[in-house]
Image (cartoon, rainbow, N blue to C red; front, side):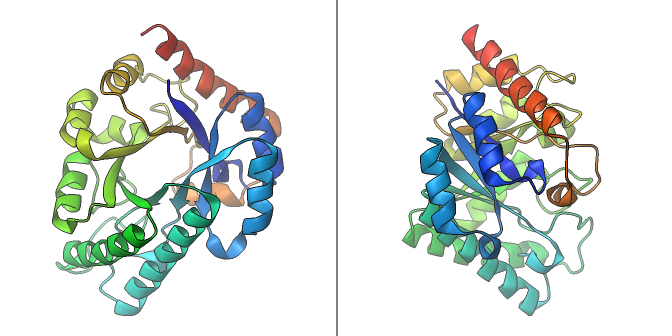
Length: 274
């Protein structure tokens, strides 16, 4: 019914082949790769995906201070635009359909100028045109108020993409961030349903689904009833203030195994009984 993937960069500096073996073992259909186009060997990655029968579901953009699409500094803004264009090229080369975009960098908690919304709109509008040329969809991700400030909930994400007005710029829903920012998840999803192209899953603790307090049944029921056809991607993380530092860590393989299995088994168990 649903296709499941997992964000591979949460495994830190683990080799991709080891990650793909794990995902194959637990019956994932896809993998979401970090948006680091300059660090990837496309040919080797395609061969590994083929070897394990996996799709590249999506590219998860990594938005640090040098990749700020809303920056008042034109040089930084242009660097961010060039970066996302490289992610679009990477997605096309690997057969992925989605590139995740955060309109400002993760960790930016307040505006430097009053023009940052407009700068972000202009940046993403340009990227929407580029994505359209390559048949790639940009998925705007709303990040909670403790990690960023510009687009923090799905209502604002909808307003953002409506201003961008590009057919290739849509919205993704991250249930961890939604736990913090949405009063009612089903209502929030209903509001953006026509634009929804991608989903991230983590529990309220940001651990694997089923280890915290999130009730995933009404959310998965909603997606099923609305015939959602995009990927459901697991993105569990340890307790860190900046999620990107996880990519530099060397974690315990047994924990990765447990969380990967826990996530998909919990969600599949819910979906099976809907």
